[in-house]
Amino acid sequence: MGPQRLQHPSPRGPLAWLLLLLVLPGAAQGSFEVSVSPEAAVVEHGGSVWINCSHTCRDPGASGGLETSLIKTDSKNGSRWEAFCLVNITEWVSSPQCYFTCNGNRMVAAANISAYQAPERVVLEPLPELELGRAYNLTCRVLKVAPVTHLTVTLRQGGRTLHTETFQSRNRTGPHDVTVTQEITPRRWDHGQQATCHAALDLAPHGPPLQSSSSAVELQEAESPTAKIIAISAIATVPAMLLGILAWGLARRGRTRRAARPEPGEATPSRTDFEMAQASAEDAPEEGGSLNSAEDASP
Image 1 (tube, rainbow, N blue to C red):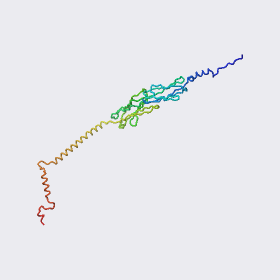
Image 2: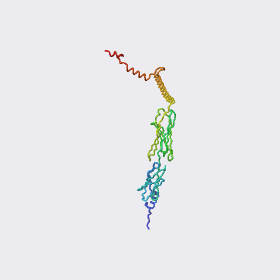
Image 3: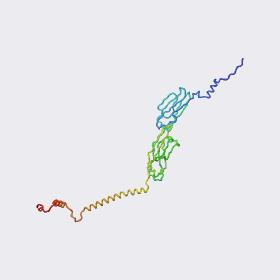
Image 4: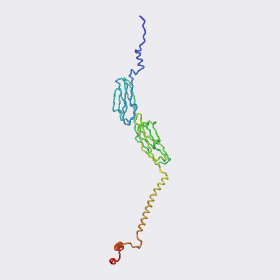
């Protein structure tokens, strides 16, 4: 019997396949990926959004769906994807999960949905009449806004910005009221200027920018004590002048009546006297005529 040659195991044999399975366990289990779009969404409170779930599994028998506490009303599907419509979103923060199973292997991808609410109202509190050099608080209230972490409040006077405030450190969910106060010291040239409050809810890049503004408050300077005394004196002088004019008019009227009244003992002409005087005037000869009619008749 001749000598036999020892043969090494071929790399294509069972040992090679075992090593390949140890290095690439996903190859036997059907490794794949699951993705969700949009990964982050910002929706108006009570609004709706479509969530698209997709996978890379080559197995036509792969199945999956969307797990969520939100309301699903409609769905669509295609090759390696499914889409779901979520409506009436009232949860301020939610995380729906897309899932698929491929060759017994389950993969999950989660989306983040945040609800927002534009400010219900922006109110700038009115100010009293302002005394020069005295400090006053300009106060703005932004009511029922969410999320507060995306809010910026700006106080302005005329064309300049007085104060800007953000609230990134407030991580509470749901709508909240926000108050911003800025101290002002009026100067003479501030009289008549308008103060306003502006609230900006910046939801970029996943939502729209929202702007709200308060009604304007006009700065009115209070009158000085000297000006008030002058104004009061002027108001009091007008009635006195009117009374003086009225008294002068009454006195003049009285003098006129007294001048037209006859003195005591003086005869008051009667209607008969007036008629006799009128008749005498009619009988009087014309200018250049003679009193003696006979003389007038002589040649």
